[in-house]
Image (cartoon, rainbow, N blue to C red):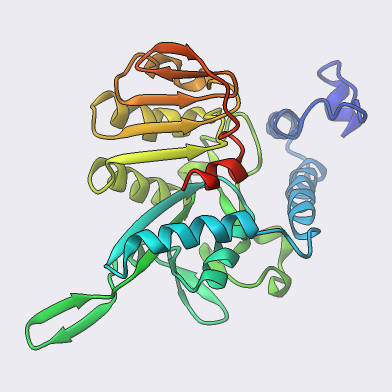
Length: 290
């Protein structure tokens, strides 16, 4: 690591965590591209392992906010066939665990039992009952979860993607997680990420009319360029964004009438700023809005 950092005249500042993990990942990958030695490939995988270990190191994560959020969504479904799509770049399993706690059906693109395989067709499948030629969709809320950057429970084997309990995955190097980087475009062009983006684009261009974001920085240009800008610019979706500070990644869309930013110290509605303090950018406070 020191060799990679020194090549860019940098040293690691542990007290302040600088360079941050995204910057380090970019530096390591760029250095490996120019110096294709095995030790730099191993360094890339070590970063992936460290990210995984930090997430899995929390043995009893607090999912109370996620549970409360899903319970309130569930109550608003009124036992009618209802789908809510979740898009996330997080690797953790908080949403999955909260769905189980609340008793909700979760669709995440995988099929099977203890070991599951990826199939994007799962996102378009609807459960229900048939009576003669009549089909009745299953009542209640279904959460359809798209993890755009992978998960600690995903792994790759022979060019196929599987899901299992994190503790059951033996081939640690095969974990299917996009490294935290400023530039993630290349990795998201490979399976399964390309298919996840394809499904996301299809949903945002058709079934989705309202998009609510909580705590997302919109710092990923590949997400902004392929998913956000086209659909917001066309007026196809309305965005309500709860964030600590206004995201620079969406500055070109700021004046759109279908864009609302609720920030720590202001609201931005259709490009117009209103001085107003809010703590709704915190997920716990966002949940209380329901």
